Amino acid sequence: MNTASPLNVAGLRKSYGDKEVVCGIDLALQPGECFGLLGPNGAGKTTTLRLCLGLTGPDSGSIRVLGHEVPQQGREARARIGVVPQFDNLDPDFTIRENLRVFGRYFDIPDSTLQERIPALLEFAGLSSRADTRIQTLSGGMKRRLTLARALINDPELLFLDEPTTGLDPQARHVIWERLRNLLKQGKTLLLTTHFMEEAERLCSRIAIMDHGKIISGGDPRALITQHVEPHVVEVYGEGAPGWGETFGRRHAERCEATGETIFCYTSDPAPLVADLDSRGDLRYLHRRANIEDVFLKLTGRDLRD
Image (tube, rainbow, N blue to C red):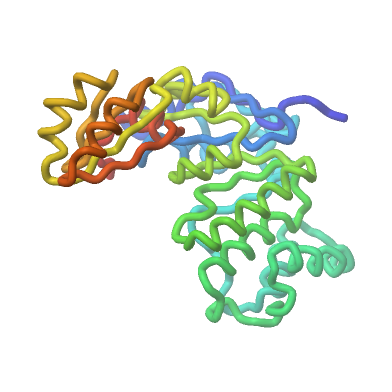
Protein backbone atom coordinates (compact mmCIF):
# COMPACT_ATOMS: atom_id res chain seq x y z
CA MET A 1 0.00 0.00 0.00
CA ASN A 2 1.33 3.44 -0.96
CA THR A 3 1.63 5.60 2.16
CA ALA A 4 3.06 8.68 0.44
CA SER A 5 1.18 11.92 1.05
CA PRO A 6 -1.57 12.35 -1.58
CA LEU A 7 -1.04 16.12 -1.37
CA ASN A 8 2.13 17.83 -0.23
CA VAL A 9 2.50 21.61 -0.36
CA ALA A 10 5.60 23.51 0.80
CA GLY A 11 6.27 27.24 0.91
CA LEU A 12 3.33 28.03 -1.40
CA ARG A 13 2.90 31.70 -2.32
CA LYS A 14 0.58 33.56 -4.68
CA SER A 15 0.04 37.30 -5.18
CA TYR A 16 -2.37 39.31 -7.28
CA GLY A 17 -0.86 42.72 -7.83
CA ASP A 18 0.40 44.04 -4.51
CA LYS A 19 -1.77 41.67 -2.46
CA GLU A 20 -0.31 38.34 -1.38
CA VAL A 21 -3.28 35.97 -0.94
CA VAL A 22 -1.33 32.78 -0.14
CA CYS A 23 1.64 33.47 2.11
CA GLY A 24 4.07 30.56 2.25
CA ILE A 25 1.78 27.78 3.46
CA ASP A 26 2.70 24.12 4.07
CA LEU A 27 0.20 21.23 3.90
CA ALA A 28 0.64 17.45 3.95
CA LEU A 29 -2.38 15.14 3.76
CA GLN A 30 -2.32 11.57 5.02
CA PRO A 31 -3.81 8.78 2.87
CA GLY A 32 -7.42 8.02 3.74
CA GLU A 33 -8.06 11.07 5.92
CA CYS A 34 -10.52 13.94 5.68
CA PHE A 35 -8.50 17.15 6.08
CA GLY A 36 -10.38 20.38 6.68
CA LEU A 37 -9.14 23.74 5.42
CA LEU A 38 -11.10 26.39 7.31
CA GLY A 39 -11.06 30.15 7.10
CA PRO A 40 -13.23 33.25 6.74
CA ASN A 41 -14.10 34.73 3.35
CA GLY A 42 -10.97 35.99 1.64
CA ALA A 43 -8.62 33.82 3.70
CA GLY A 44 -7.09 32.25 0.57
CA LYS A 45 -8.76 28.82 0.65
CA THR A 46 -10.15 28.79 -2.89
CA THR A 47 -6.91 30.15 -4.33
CA THR A 48 -5.06 27.36 -2.50
CA LEU A 49 -7.36 24.75 -4.06
CA ARG A 50 -6.85 26.24 -7.53
CA LEU A 51 -3.09 26.17 -7.03
CA CYS A 52 -3.20 22.53 -5.93
CA LEU A 53 -5.28 21.62 -8.99
CA GLY A 54 -2.85 23.36 -11.34
CA LEU A 55 -5.51 25.84 -12.48
CA THR A 56 -3.48 28.78 -11.16
CA GLY A 57 0.31 29.04 -11.22
CA PRO A 58 2.14 29.71 -7.93
CA ASP A 59 4.67 32.49 -7.53
CA SER A 60 6.88 30.15 -5.49
CA GLY A 61 6.79 26.93 -3.52
CA SER A 62 6.17 23.31 -4.47
CA ILE A 63 3.00 21.25 -4.96
CA ARG A 64 3.03 17.48 -5.31
CA VAL A 65 -0.31 15.74 -5.93
CA LEU A 66 -0.44 11.93 -6.06
CA GLY A 67 3.20 11.84 -7.10
CA HIS A 68 2.84 14.54 -9.78
CA GLU A 69 4.52 17.94 -9.71
CA VAL A 70 1.91 20.67 -10.15
CA PRO A 71 1.38 22.75 -12.23
CA GLN A 72 3.92 21.05 -14.55
CA GLN A 73 2.00 17.76 -14.45
CA GLY A 74 -1.36 19.26 -13.61
CA ARG A 75 -3.26 17.33 -16.28
CA GLU A 76 -1.93 14.00 -15.04
CA ALA A 77 -2.78 14.91 -11.43
CA ARG A 78 -6.32 16.08 -12.28
CA ALA A 79 -7.02 12.76 -14.00
CA ARG A 80 -6.80 11.12 -10.56
CA ILE A 81 -8.68 13.81 -8.59
CA GLY A 82 -12.40 14.39 -8.03
CA VAL A 83 -13.65 17.95 -7.53
CA VAL A 84 -16.92 19.11 -5.96
CA PRO A 85 -17.05 22.86 -6.68
CA GLN A 86 -18.64 25.40 -4.38
CA PHE A 87 -21.46 26.04 -6.86
CA ASP A 88 -23.18 23.36 -8.92
CA ASN A 89 -22.20 23.46 -12.61
CA LEU A 90 -24.36 20.62 -13.89
CA ASP A 91 -25.53 20.82 -17.49
CA PRO A 92 -29.25 21.69 -17.46
CA ASP A 93 -29.76 20.33 -20.98
CA PHE A 94 -28.96 16.78 -19.92
CA THR A 95 -30.53 14.21 -17.66
CA ILE A 96 -28.85 12.91 -14.52
CA ARG A 97 -27.48 9.89 -16.37
CA GLU A 98 -26.30 12.02 -19.32
CA ASN A 99 -24.47 14.42 -16.98
CA LEU A 100 -22.47 11.52 -15.60
CA ARG A 101 -21.78 10.03 -19.04
CA VAL A 102 -20.66 13.32 -20.63
CA PHE A 103 -18.42 14.17 -17.68
CA GLY A 104 -16.84 10.73 -17.85
CA ARG A 105 -15.90 11.31 -21.48
CA TYR A 106 -13.76 14.30 -20.40
CA PHE A 107 -11.51 11.70 -18.77
CA ASP A 108 -11.51 9.52 -21.92
CA ILE A 109 -13.26 6.76 -19.99
CA PRO A 110 -14.59 4.14 -22.45
CA ASP A 111 -18.37 3.92 -22.80
CA SER A 112 -18.28 0.31 -21.66
CA THR A 113 -16.61 1.35 -18.39
CA LEU A 114 -19.05 4.22 -17.92
CA GLN A 115 -21.95 1.83 -18.41
CA GLU A 116 -20.61 -0.23 -15.52
CA ARG A 117 -19.87 2.71 -13.22
CA ILE A 118 -22.94 4.91 -13.65
CA PRO A 119 -25.51 2.59 -11.98
CA ALA A 120 -23.34 2.34 -8.87
CA LEU A 121 -22.89 6.13 -8.78
CA LEU A 122 -26.63 6.67 -9.15
CA GLU A 123 -27.17 4.28 -6.23
CA PHE A 124 -24.51 6.11 -4.20
CA ALA A 125 -26.30 9.41 -4.81
CA GLY A 126 -29.74 7.93 -4.12
CA LEU A 127 -30.86 8.93 -7.62
CA SER A 128 -31.38 5.58 -9.35
CA SER A 129 -35.11 6.18 -9.77
CA ARG A 130 -34.47 9.66 -11.23
CA ALA A 131 -31.72 8.72 -13.70
CA ASP A 132 -33.59 10.06 -16.74
CA THR A 133 -34.79 13.25 -15.02
CA ARG A 134 -33.55 16.61 -16.23
CA ILE A 135 -31.55 18.79 -13.87
CA GLN A 136 -34.09 21.65 -13.63
CA THR A 137 -36.52 19.47 -11.67
CA LEU A 138 -34.03 18.46 -8.94
CA SER A 139 -33.92 19.86 -5.43
CA GLY A 140 -30.75 21.49 -4.11
CA GLY A 141 -29.89 18.36 -2.15
CA MET A 142 -30.30 16.13 -5.21
CA LYS A 143 -28.04 18.42 -7.25
CA ARG A 144 -25.34 18.31 -4.60
CA ARG A 145 -25.53 14.50 -4.40
CA LEU A 146 -25.26 14.33 -8.19
CA THR A 147 -22.29 16.71 -8.19
CA LEU A 148 -20.59 14.47 -5.63
CA ALA A 149 -21.36 11.35 -7.68
CA ARG A 150 -20.04 13.08 -10.81
CA ALA A 151 -16.76 13.82 -9.01
CA LEU A 152 -16.33 10.05 -8.55
CA ILE A 153 -16.77 9.14 -12.23
CA ASN A 154 -12.98 8.71 -12.70
CA ASP A 155 -12.63 6.67 -9.46
CA PRO A 156 -10.35 9.34 -7.92
CA GLU A 157 -7.92 8.72 -5.09
CA LEU A 158 -8.19 12.30 -3.82
CA LEU A 159 -11.28 14.53 -3.65
CA PHE A 160 -11.37 18.32 -3.30
CA LEU A 161 -14.67 19.43 -1.75
CA ASP A 162 -15.23 23.19 -1.77
CA GLU A 163 -18.08 23.92 0.69
CA PRO A 164 -20.06 20.83 -0.40
CA THR A 165 -23.15 21.45 1.78
CA THR A 166 -23.62 25.21 1.33
CA GLY A 167 -27.29 26.07 0.86
CA LEU A 168 -28.62 22.68 1.95
CA ASP A 169 -31.22 22.03 4.62
CA PRO A 170 -30.16 19.96 7.67
CA GLN A 171 -31.60 16.71 6.27
CA ALA A 172 -29.72 17.03 2.97
CA ARG A 173 -26.55 18.03 4.81
CA HIS A 174 -26.66 14.86 6.93
CA VAL A 175 -27.12 12.75 3.79
CA ILE A 176 -24.01 14.31 2.21
CA TRP A 177 -22.05 13.69 5.43
CA GLU A 178 -23.07 10.03 5.35
CA ARG A 179 -21.89 9.74 1.73
CA LEU A 180 -18.55 11.35 2.59
CA ARG A 181 -18.02 8.97 5.50
CA ASN A 182 -18.62 6.08 3.09
CA LEU A 183 -15.89 7.43 0.81
CA LEU A 184 -13.47 7.55 3.74
CA LYS A 185 -14.29 3.90 4.51
CA GLN A 186 -13.33 3.12 0.90
CA GLY A 187 -9.90 4.67 1.50
CA LYS A 188 -10.43 7.92 -0.39
CA THR A 189 -8.59 11.03 0.80
CA LEU A 190 -10.70 14.18 1.18
CA LEU A 191 -9.67 17.84 1.29
CA LEU A 192 -12.66 19.78 2.59
CA THR A 193 -13.29 23.51 2.81
CA THR A 194 -16.37 24.54 4.74
CA HIS A 195 -17.95 27.34 6.75
CA PHE A 196 -19.89 24.80 8.81
CA MET A 197 -17.71 24.17 11.84
CA GLU A 198 -19.90 21.23 12.89
CA GLU A 199 -19.21 19.66 9.49
CA ALA A 200 -15.45 19.93 10.01
CA GLU A 201 -15.68 18.55 13.54
CA ARG A 202 -17.80 15.57 12.40
CA LEU A 203 -15.77 14.60 9.33
CA CYS A 204 -12.18 15.77 9.71
CA SER A 205 -9.40 13.95 11.52
CA ARG A 206 -7.25 17.07 11.13
CA ILE A 207 -7.93 20.68 10.27
CA ALA A 208 -5.95 23.80 9.39
CA ILE A 209 -7.30 27.28 10.05
CA MET A 210 -6.27 29.80 7.42
CA ASP A 211 -6.52 33.59 7.62
CA HIS A 212 -5.00 36.37 5.53
CA GLY A 213 -3.22 33.75 3.41
CA LYS A 214 -1.50 32.00 6.31
CA ILE A 215 -2.09 28.80 8.28
CA ILE A 216 -2.53 30.14 11.81
CA SER A 217 -3.26 26.86 13.59
CA GLY A 218 -3.84 23.20 12.83
CA GLY A 219 -4.17 19.69 14.15
CA ASP A 220 -6.72 17.30 15.64
CA PRO A 221 -10.02 19.15 16.27
CA ARG A 222 -10.37 18.04 19.90
CA ALA A 223 -6.73 18.92 20.62
CA LEU A 224 -7.23 22.39 19.11
CA ILE A 225 -10.26 22.98 21.34
CA THR A 226 -8.26 22.00 24.42
CA GLN A 227 -5.32 24.16 23.32
CA HIS A 228 -7.18 27.35 22.48
CA VAL A 229 -10.42 27.66 24.46
CA GLU A 230 -11.88 26.89 27.86
CA PRO A 231 -13.95 23.68 28.04
CA HIS A 232 -17.37 25.28 28.76
CA VAL A 233 -19.30 28.06 27.06
CA VAL A 234 -22.32 29.87 28.48
CA GLU A 235 -24.14 31.96 25.87
CA VAL A 236 -26.39 34.63 27.40
CA TYR A 237 -29.09 36.39 25.37
CA GLY A 238 -31.30 39.39 25.95
CA GLU A 239 -31.32 43.14 26.32
CA GLY A 240 -29.70 42.93 29.75
CA ALA A 241 -26.96 40.50 28.69
CA PRO A 242 -24.22 43.12 28.15
CA GLY A 243 -24.78 44.59 31.61
CA TRP A 244 -24.86 41.13 33.20
CA GLY A 245 -21.65 40.27 31.40
CA GLU A 246 -19.87 43.31 32.84
CA THR A 247 -21.16 42.96 36.42
CA PHE A 248 -21.21 39.18 36.83
CA GLY A 249 -19.94 37.28 33.80
CA ARG A 250 -16.46 38.78 33.70
CA ARG A 251 -15.97 38.12 37.43
CA HIS A 252 -16.79 34.40 37.14
CA ALA A 253 -15.53 33.41 33.67
CA GLU A 254 -11.98 33.33 32.35
CA ARG A 255 -13.07 35.18 29.21
CA CYS A 256 -16.21 36.97 27.94
CA GLU A 257 -16.95 38.19 24.42
CA ALA A 258 -19.88 40.33 23.33
CA THR A 259 -21.67 40.19 19.98
CA GLY A 260 -24.71 42.47 19.90
CA GLU A 261 -26.99 41.41 22.76
CA THR A 262 -25.25 38.04 23.20
CA ILE A 263 -22.47 37.41 25.70
CA PHE A 264 -20.21 34.36 25.32
CA CYS A 265 -18.64 33.32 28.62
CA TYR A 266 -15.75 30.85 28.37
CA THR A 267 -15.01 29.04 31.60
CA SER A 268 -13.63 25.95 33.28
CA ASP A 269 -16.36 26.10 35.95
CA PRO A 270 -19.81 27.04 34.60
CA ALA A 271 -21.64 26.39 37.89
CA PRO A 272 -21.63 29.99 39.27
CA LEU A 273 -22.78 31.40 35.93
CA VAL A 274 -25.57 28.86 35.49
CA ALA A 275 -26.75 29.22 39.10
CA ASP A 276 -27.04 32.99 38.77
CA LEU A 277 -28.82 32.78 35.41
CA ASP A 278 -31.29 30.20 36.78
CA SER A 279 -32.27 32.70 39.47
CA ARG A 280 -33.09 35.40 36.93
CA GLY A 281 -36.11 35.71 34.69
CA ASP A 282 -34.90 38.42 32.33
CA LEU A 283 -32.15 36.49 30.53
CA ARG A 284 -32.01 33.32 28.44
CA TYR A 285 -28.89 31.19 28.24
CA LEU A 286 -27.35 28.10 26.67
CA HIS A 287 -24.67 26.05 28.41
CA ARG A 288 -22.60 23.83 26.08
CA ARG A 289 -19.18 22.30 25.56
CA ALA A 290 -16.65 24.32 23.57
CA ASN A 291 -16.33 23.42 19.90
CA ILE A 292 -14.29 24.19 16.79
CA GLU A 293 -16.41 27.26 16.04
CA ASP A 294 -15.20 28.79 19.31
CA VAL A 295 -11.59 28.12 18.27
CA PHE A 296 -12.26 29.56 14.81
CA LEU A 297 -13.81 32.76 16.19
CA LYS A 298 -11.08 33.24 18.79
CA LEU A 299 -8.34 32.96 16.14
CA THR A 300 -10.01 34.87 13.28
CA GLY A 301 -12.31 37.27 15.14
CA ARG A 302 -16.05 37.91 15.04
CA ASP A 303 -16.01 40.75 12.50
CA LEU A 304 -17.86 40.20 9.22
CA ARG A 305 -15.72 39.48 6.15
CA ASP A 306 -16.80 40.41 2.61
